[in-house]
Every structure is written in structure tokens, then in C-alpha cells.
Amino acid sequence: MKKTLALTSPVKKEKGRFLKGLDILTYALTAFLALGCEGFLAFGIEQNIYHCTIKEFNTWQSILHWVLTYIIWGAFAFYVCRSTKKKGYDLFPEKDEKIRPWQWVCIAVGVVVCLISTWIDWNGSKVLTEFKNNGLLLFVFQYIYYFIEVFLVMLIIVCGQKACEVWFGKENIPYGGIIAALTWGMGHWWSKGSLAAGLFTAFCGLVLGSVYLLTNRKAKLTYILLCVIFIL
Image 1: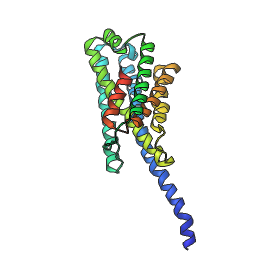
Image 2 (image 1 turned 45 degrees about the vertical axis):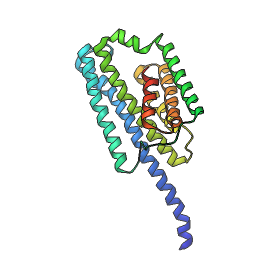
Image 3 (image 1 turned 120 degrees about the horizontal axis):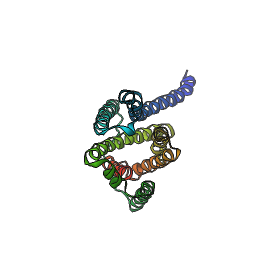
Image 4 (image 1 turned 180 degrees about the horizontal axis):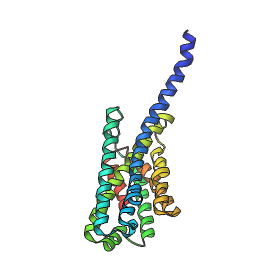
């Protein structure tokens, strides 16, 4: 009997670890699903109502689209945060560990590389270009949209990181960035209809996941840096 327990106990432990990791990963995929809901809203519902593509929406159609997206994304984000907290998965623990100089250097390099890439991709400042093209009203609503999108991407990174750490143990690999690259990044390939856009976003996902680890998982700082990288 003792031998049987000795043999089965590790198996049960491995199974429990796998299921726990899978459970956490579902929350990363839930955050990604939230992002995907915008596509269903735009292409499956609004396009049929307005009889035009999202690029052809007028000012109020665009604003309504973004407001509806806020509501959907906010509901998903609330669900993920509340459900993980109930299960004892602390997504945003307080970290007192100081960030070392070499970490700041790596963070700075990642931020600069992404900002330069964005500058090249937009032939100048993304912010100024969007402000010029959209005007103040649309600009404000669009950037609220960006801030919420970044939070969902951070949920993908955090949950993906935790899930893979449960499975593989190592904590110094940007698993969350890999998950973000494979989901959010490749999702842009479909939504933008451009492989280049998908690969660029996937690269940003890897950088964002690395930044999360380099900040020693400090939630507020990570979110600010993610906003700088993605929005600017």
C-alpha cells in the first residue's frame, strides 16, 4: 500500500500542477477573447447595421463603437480580476524589491527600440498623427480605448506568466510576453490584414512581457511603461 501511494502521489501532484496552470492560462485567454470581441462588434454587428467598414464610420459611429468596446472590455477585465482574486491568484502583489541599474538599462533599451519602431512605422509621431487625423474629440475617445487595451494586454502577460511558471518552474523567462505575442500579436495580423503589423505587435508583446519581469512585477510601473511603449 505504501509503495502504491509513493507511486501515485507524484502523478497526482503533477496533474494538480497542470490543472492549476491551465486554470490560470484560461484567464489570459479570456483577456484575449475580450480583445477579440471588438472584431465581432465591428465586423459582425456594426458593419451590418451601418453598411460600411469601421474605417468609414463617422464621428458618432466611431465614438459609440469605442464606448461599447469600453463596456465589453471593462466587464471582462473585472471578471478576470475578481475571479482570480477569489481563487487566491494574486495577480498584482506588492513588490518592495528594488530595480537594479542593469534592469533599468534593459527597460530603457526596450522602450527606445519600440518607440523608434513606432516612429518609423508612422513616419513620425503616432500621437501627433492621430491627433491631426482625428481631431480632439475622436483623439480623446481613442486614447481611452488604448489605455483599456493596454490593461487587458497586461492581464494576458501576467496570467500567461503565472500559468507557465506553475508548469515549468523558472521565473526569469518572459512566458507572458510569448503568450501575448502569440495571441494579441497574431490577432493584429488578422484585424489589420497585415503580416508586418502582426509581427511588429508580436515583437512588442515580447518586449512588454520582458518589461514586466524587469520591473520585478511592479504592477503600476509596468502599466505605465506598457502605455508608453504601446501608445506613444
